[in-house]
Image 1 (cartoon, rainbow, N blue to C red):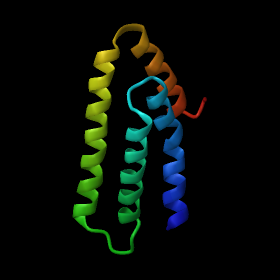
Image 2: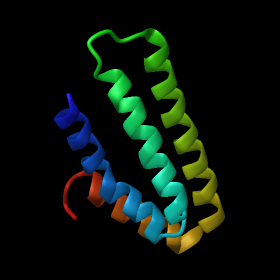
Image 3: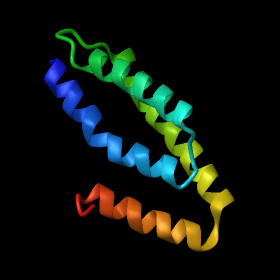
Length: 95
């Protein structure tokens, strides 16, 4: 179980680093997101999983995306285009 959770978290680290690099989140916020995501991942990989755990994880992801899109609106213009391009490359494994 721990290996799966560790792998899932490690796969998201480049994404979080990119969000910090472009100034959408601070290092402290990224650490907080990492801790929260790790705790939620462990809950989802227990032998007995509850519906509440899934809902909590989904709500967490929705909250992060809302913050992300609000920050994107603040950046606007070329910064957003550059960020989206780099983010897409990260997601597809080309960076």
